[in-house]
Length: 221
Image (cartoon, rainbow, N blue to C red; front, top):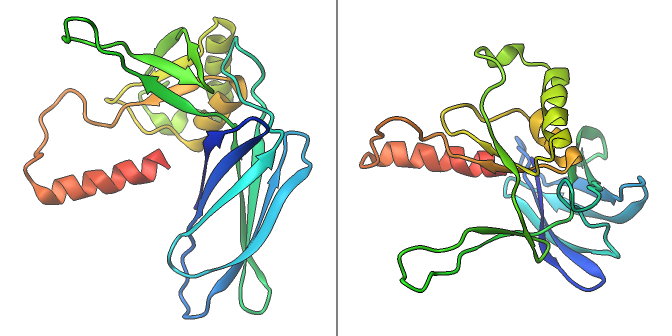
């Protein structure tokens, strides 16, 4: 597993956070080679580390980053992080790549004068964004039938309509990686509901709560 995110945008660089998890069936630590490529496929950072069964957590900086902006505000350049896993003899066991946009996203909530409510404003890279959104539900009653081309067609229609954010409905599904990759490439932010819609849930049952927590942690990453 690879989980990468932007921690902070500074004047001339971006501070990135990276977590890598690997399953190791031996007692010997394995090796990971990590390379970050810019949108022009030029390597901008690399390192080699040992990894056991505990997740490897790293911070690194990217100089003069190309910032990701949502649809209508600018370009949406993507960096690629490639991780190669080697055994103790240097044999390549597995490799995986993920794409990420360099961006920070916050929600600003300012209390009103009466104290009864608050604002709810998306802050992207320090800039307030006027959200032009839509509600995303499963594109087919049988999710296995949805192809990457169908996702691309629907999301391109949203992009052409000026949509810059989609809310993924909590009565649907956790969409596959293709959906998120296309949103990234098209400059569409996504607000993912947890799958807790239209029903009662045994929130007093600790086994259920722990299962829900595991599901949330996995899907957020």
